[in-house]
Amino acid sequence: MRRSLARRLALTLVFPAVLGAAGPAAPTGPLLWEAWPAARVSPADPWGLKHSGLRLALADLQARHPGLITQVEEGTSAEGRKIPLLRLGSGPTGVLLWSQMHGDEPTATSALLDLIHWMGMRPQDPVVQQLLSRLTLWVIPMLNPDGAERTQRWNAQSIDINRDALQLSSPEGRFLKAVRDRVQPSVGYNLHNQNPHLRAGSKGTQVAMSLLSVPGDEAFTVTPGTRQTRRLAVAVDRLVQPLARGRVARYDTDYTARAFGDAMTRWGTPTLLIETGGWAGPAEAERLVRLNFVALAGSLAALADGSLAAVDDAAYDRIPLNQRDATAALVVRHVRLASGRGLAPFAADLSFLLPGPFAGERPRLRQPVLTEVGDLDHVLGLTELDGSGLLAVPWPAPEGTDWPALKAILASRNLDATDEAAVLAAVKALGEAAVAGPGYTGAVLLYRRNPGGRVHLTGAVLRGQVVGFEPR
Ligand SMILES: [Zn+2]
Image 1: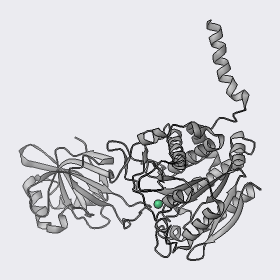
Image 2 (image 1 turned 90 degrees about the vertical axis):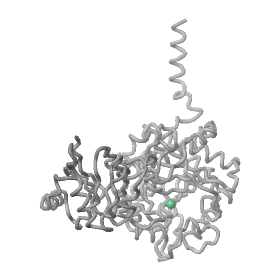
Image 3 (image 1 turned 45 degrees about the horizontal axis):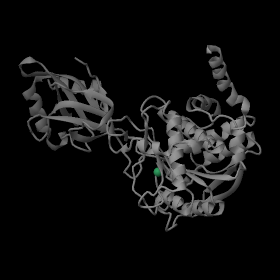
C-alpha cells in the first residue's frame, strides 16, 4: 500500500517531463530571476540608454543571433529619429509590446533587450522554441526617442503620446496606430514606469510593479479579450510575488478614451499595462529591470504554452490597488516642530522626497524637498525616523553646508546645547525663511530635550537625509 503510493508519486513527478505532449513546463519566476544575469545586455542605468545606444544594442543582438530578429520597419519621431519595429517568432498569436512611449520611463526597454538576448541564447530550449513557434512578437522598444533624449514624458511636440490615440497629432502615435491596424495583434503590452511613491493597498509596501487589464469602455466590461489580460496580470503577479512579496498592485485608473491602452483594447487588441514603480535599496534600477524580465518572459511563455487559459481571472480583483502619494523617501515622526513664525512648537510628522530620474507629469524635482507636515500615518517612509522627544527646528543653511559645518555654525552661536527658549528665539529671528512647509529645502535641526528645559543638538535632516543623528 505504502509502496504503491510512493510509485504513484514517482510517476506523477516524472510523467509531466516525459510525456511532453503538453509541451515544456512554463518557467517559474525564481527560475527566470536566476536566468537574468546571463541574459542581461542592458546597461546599469536604464535612463542612460538613449536612442543611439538602443540602435547599437539592437545591431549587436542582430549580429549575435542571426535570424532571430527581423527589423520590419522604422517609424520616424517628430525630430526625425528612427523608431525600430522588430518581429520575433512566427506563431499564429500576435503580441504587440511597446515601451517608453513616455520618454522618462525606460525600465521595460532594458528588459526587452534582455528578453531578446535570453531567447537568442537558448535556441534549443523547448520553452523558447514554443514561444517563438506559437507567438509572433512585435516589439517597439522605444516609441518616444525624442522624449528619452530629454528624459521627459512628452515627445518633441510636448504631446503626451499616451493621450493622442484619437487625435493622432504625434508621428509616434500615428506609427503605433498604423502598426496595430496592419498587424492586428491578439494581445498588447503597454510598458511604463509610474511614480515610485505608491503603496500596494493602504497598509502595503512600496509598489515595484502595477498591472492593469486595460478596459475598453467606461464600465470596465469584462470581455473575452479583457479576461485574457486579467489572466495575464494574475500570471505576472504569481511570477513576481516570490521575488517581490507584497510589491505588486493593480493600477488605479479610470477609462481614458484618448489613451492608447484603452484605445487598443477598444480596437480589438486587449492590452495589459505594466507599470514599473520603485523598490528602495541597492541597485534598485537593475532589480526592477530584472523583475520586468521575469514578468515578460514568464507571461509570454504562459501565453504560448496555453497554461494561461487555466488561470483564474477572478484573482485579478484580489490584487491590492495602488495607493497614491503613500510613500516618501524619509518620514520623521512625532516631533515637536518649531517655526520662524514664532508659533509654539506643535506635534507633527514630516515627509521628504529626493529627486529621481522619473518625473512623470510633475515638474522635475531639482533638489530634496519637504513635502508635507502634519499627520502622516498613511505615508510609509522608505527611511523612517522616530522623532519622539525631539524638537525639530527649520534652519535654512547655506547651500553646500554639510553636517560638521552646520554643527560648527550652531556651536559658534552657542545653539548646540542651550535652553529651548534660546533656540526658539533664534528660529523666530529667521522669520519666513525658517518655516518648514511643503517645498521647504533648508535643513531641519533635531534637538533632544533634557531635564530642566535644556536642549542639545542631536542631528539634522539635510537634503532629505538624516545626518549626525544619535539615538538615545
Ligand atoms: Zn507612462
